[in-house]
Image: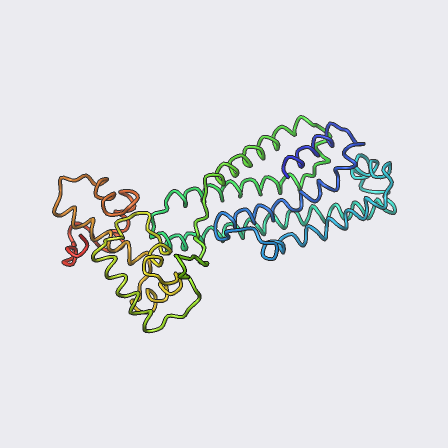
Length: 343
């Protein structure tokens, strides 16, 4: 997609009008789809697990409608008229007639849509990242620091790219015909940003685990079900056994989905139990135990380094351990009596 966008720029600015004539519509389609496609890309890195036409196709409705209008003008024009429009009429402010007025009007609308989409999807992407941080806390108990850092960097890069693309659209590509040497700046900027986005995306895995069907043997684990008294008892006993005897919270990779897996209930049922029955979150449940364990180790084994204690307690770093201990008031001076149960 981006290769074709750059290729069309080559044909336009070289210039090779007789070839760009065939690329002009493709350029407009790709240009209008750019921000929606990147927003879909961000969704797939955060909340969505697969590309679905019904869910993601709606983001491409406006690009499709405006592209169709642009295509109508090209089809009405002859090839010679289209080339004249691209390299002459497009720069004129007056004396346009007939199809040239229509096509320039549609071209301006396409640029306006491009700019509006940039701002809209910039806001949506940022909001998605903010919400996603809370989801990470729910599902990963605060141990996905690197994932969060990658998402922040990805969002920052996307912001710069969108603002840069909007600025270039406001200027208009036709103005670069005056001095084609200026093209080096937007080309280097956008190429670098696209590389960073691709590199981050390659290393980023979806941070929201899919709460969908999984089967262990013939038993469906994540069926859609409401939390009943039997389910409440099952979860309560499961947590007690796994935390008090198996000490699963010491595994820093433990997620809500995996814990629900072990108890043989759905993640939604587990969340219902935590929120409604004990008034806690997954983050609070797991990290309180980890912080208690770390406090106990620091009190009874002062010779162990903080890094080793954080590792033994299920934290991904000393900073994370200290932040969680401060959050729950579990410093060295306030070790709880029930810490013995955390070992």
